[in-house]
Image 1 (cartoon, rainbow, N blue to C red):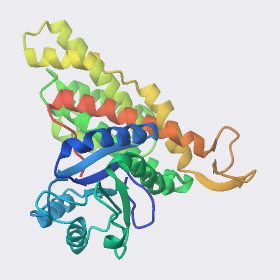
Image 2: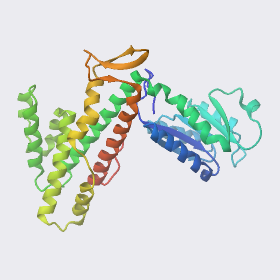
Image 3: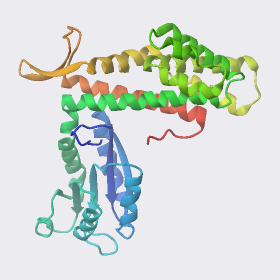
Length: 337
């Protein structure tokens, strides 16, 4: 979860940074927190777990280099090298990491020691899970605000769109098909069938030249990228099975792809339809409740807060499916910028 400068949450991942001298102690806590976030349509992401601040500047610089935003810090107040949490948090603030922190310990009352510090919560080890969930609930409130949800949804679908484009490029340029130019020509032909604008420019693209794959894909709208993935997956599986190849790598890819259920029609219904509606929606108050309505109003679209949970879960579902396809055909994890 990230807040941009306009206050909108832009990611479904909730990033937690941990300082604990015995990481095993945090496992049951993080499991419970992860379950809560999963039920709320978000995903727990542990940025890192560290025992002290010996390498703190490097840790923070690494986080910044990866363009990660830390949403919450969990910190054992008494670390193994006798560093107090209050000393450690001053170092963190000096590194310009202004994130809410939960201090936890089994030793006495810390209120007087840290009362001068801002953005601090206190918990015992036995209450850490419950206190963390309470703090996260408060942090997620703005993310669940309907106007902010629209920004989140648009950002997440844009990321899925980029992931689909990368998948298609690997299919075309990754030595998977015997004749990838045929597949690229099909993508071009399907695009020409559906688009009325800029046809002259599209027709001039030489689809037999693999180097032009980027040009063609840049013209594809999201649904046709989804259709292309469905078609490419089906065609690849059929080609490998028909050739009775002895290439173990390609056979393994085929087997894995056969177990991944991605259908362009379902993606359109579960992801793109809502995205298109949200693109033309405004927030209104109806019967005392804030809702998002299409403009101009449509009877079939009044998006309420209760529906946002299902939408977030659908985003996570297709992120997992598409990431699995990408990893299967490329052999590596898909990484965002």
